[in-house]
Each structure stands twice: as structure tokens, then as C-alpha cells.
Length: 122
Figure (cartoon, rainbow, N blue to C red):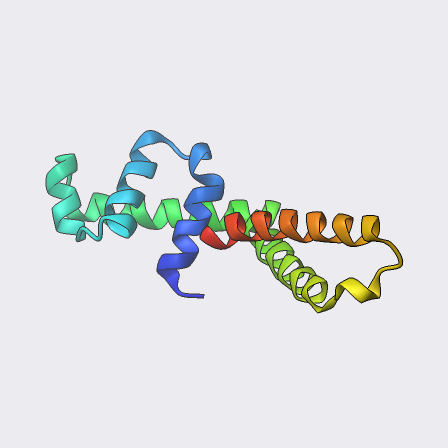
């Protein structure tokens, strides 16, 4: 996975566990695409201090993921949800013994599509 995408996901899941300064530097570098020198100017500290803080923050996020696995679980659940959505689309009205069962199927399919659209936006 591309580093920018990986860092964005890690920040989404574990960002609240970081300090304000760590979150800010991560945001400035990965979301706002500022260079280390530009961030150093904004934060009024050296470029080397920003580099060290960024690397330490990346390591902390990776350790959280190694221990908790939320991002990995997110991708696995997203994949399963996509597979369920595909399977549900294959059913036709005539596959159901009653109109009630068909309507329930349509409601379930609609709810899964809603959830999948939210998960896909991440």
C-alpha cells in the first residue's frame, strides 16, 4: 500500500492516541504535503527535530497497528463486505418463495450498500 494512504489510515484509526504536536506534524507532512523545512518553520524548531518527530510518530503508529490490527481488520472486513454485496446482487426476485422474502433481501442489500459506500469513502 502506498505510504501516504497507509499513514492516512493509521492516523484516522490511531490519531487520537497521539499528542497534539505529533498529530499536527503528521497532518502537515502527509495531508498538507509540506516539506520538513516548511514544517520546521511553522513549528519554530529545527528540520532535524521535525524529521525525528515524524519518524518517531510513524513508528508509534506502526506499533499500534502491530498490536491492535485495526487497519488490517478494516481492509479484511471491507473485502468481505464487497464480496457479500456482489453475492446479493446475483439474486433475482424469482429466487425467493415469497414477496416478503424478496423485500427483506432488498432491504438487506440496501443496508449493505449503504455501509459499503461509507467504508469505501475512507
